[in-house]
Length: 193
Image (cartoon, rainbow, N blue to C red):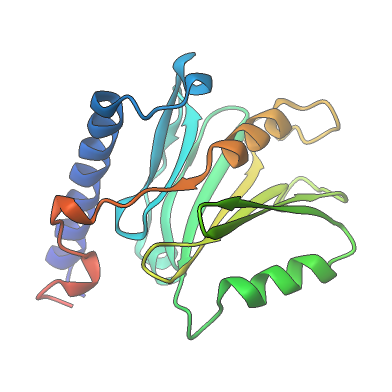
């Protein structure tokens, strides 16, 4: 994809995220728990949504990060979040879930969101640069979406560090929402691909 193509995709995504936030506010579908300074973010094309703290800052996605499937990278002083998308031919939800369930340092659970599962897992042997908490789900487009949460600039990951409460709140709010009626062009159908 050319630089112009990347620029268009980023602008389209930014516009879609703004529309998404406005639509949630107008439709009143924002959960009560998020009325205290939290807001919704996610990826419209996959129908993946979750709450983030109001002081969340977008760190931007480099070309190298995008090549690894990153859609969103950001956070604040207390946490860093990364949203990645995986093509089902590379890895799907069932396979990823099996990996997490076999990992001895993973405390995992599954909940239903309509007919779709959402897997959450906590790293019971955390480190300063390891994934502390994760959320995985199949998007409405059939792709695997994975939210990874790491320490923030404070690098705190002890038992009582705020990152754990933030991660749990993000996991509790993660859900699917169908935005197909918006008529947005998928970034994968760009003419400059």
